[in-house]
Image (cartoon, rainbow, N blue to C red):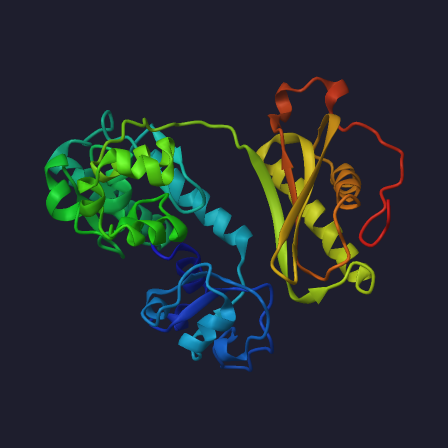
Length: 380
């Protein structure tokens, strides 16, 4: 989907179309006067939030996802800042995926704003190399949701992902294996999904800047510098080798909720505020599990301190749960094993060891534990 969160907000606030808009932060300072634009100017933001997404008008100023809002304000101070509304985004995510399901059965869900579709057996999937079906899907999504998307059609998931990003927004790009040298190799190596900033920097230190240069490298050299698995994977990607099928169903590994504070919070001095946020995170996490029909066995916490160092602590229970009170009790137990002397920037709660609730025997669900939960600032 094209700038998905921002596009959903523009459906709600059509007067913002054509303006730089940034989505992010937990709350927006001030309030809009009658007749004024919704949200606030980005220059008014003070806090530690990050950009969730931005319209293409804001991206033209160098604003991008995961950038701090303070840095984004330096690049585009006049951008409109809106808080994220994930419930609304999930609703539109379900809507656009339901549209796609009318055209193809084999769909791999890749998150809130992206899917892979197997065109092989889909009606009309081979017309014009897939362009005809892509155009029908694109038009149907626009008609049913008012949103735009970009579609890449290629022989593999790797190339389809690259193709989908070539002509945003509202693009349709068809790639064949024969296009590798002319259309893929000139791209930066960083464009391969999975090569992050650190790996890209290490590649550049070796004089490898493009996918073509990566393909021209010796596989053994890459494996010596990056290890057998990662180095071999990079080499295969550069040559477009990817035989992964479209996976229509997979079980989630973990579910988490976290928040970054507007100011550093101390476990003792700010115990009440942290305790409230902690309870809210646990309740939200429980709702996520219940909505998705899963229960969890491992419950833990994630902390980021004022010096940006991170720590995690986990605890595993005898049964499985999706109950907010049990999650909070066990997360608090894990928390008591974490260092709490330094102020905190971020607090998160995570569950793993997931299983579908429908498959669990009754005695394994919601185990009782009468011991006191403790909480933020309490010593073990």
